[in-house]
Length: 301
Image (cartoon, rainbow, N blue to C red):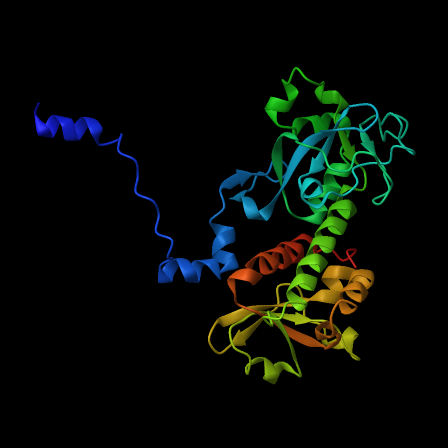
């Protein structure tokens, strides 16, 4: 048989060679860059703003069944990741008594006890821009307007009726609490590792003496009301150009900041640096997302 014909026929049947276990210099650099990772996520469109952005800048929402009634609740997938409570089985028996303006938006305590701890799966979801004001806007929509931003596939799903979908009235603060808890968990992990992923600094000049700085944490001080960094604050660093400066009292709130300080003496300082390492990329990404969520919202503290 013609060897060229054989080669052409088998070209796409031959298994691909296994990827090399050793990363290239570019791949190693990419693993340490959280911003490149964020920009490389797939594009998705927000139905509220119409913005088409990398998925990192949006929140993934799905549907989970109410623990008592089975009615669909629109919930962020952060709930699945954290195992947080979805609703109060005691205060909302059927999801109908607390409807607002005829819509399926209900008020639910964030930490209310529930038997519905960790749903196994969600209905394929939608993506909403990761900004607190956008979620607050949805909470104030009338039922007709709310229905217009639901994914088309939800409206035609035979497993449930779209007009029964419930949106938490306090969704903006509920998501904020989830993001804050996740941030504290990630920072606590880094702060308690022997590898010194987070190191304290005496002042801003001392930051320049640290190696591989990826981000700066400002944890407050005696003149916190005057000296706090603004949202999206950046500072120059000798080898990285510019790195973000995170205002943790504003991002985490006093309660979560106290919890963080109790985890390690590193967080008792006014300033600390997160090293630019592969193992710190997830934490840096999450802090960036949290900052974007509350950046222009004066009520977040």
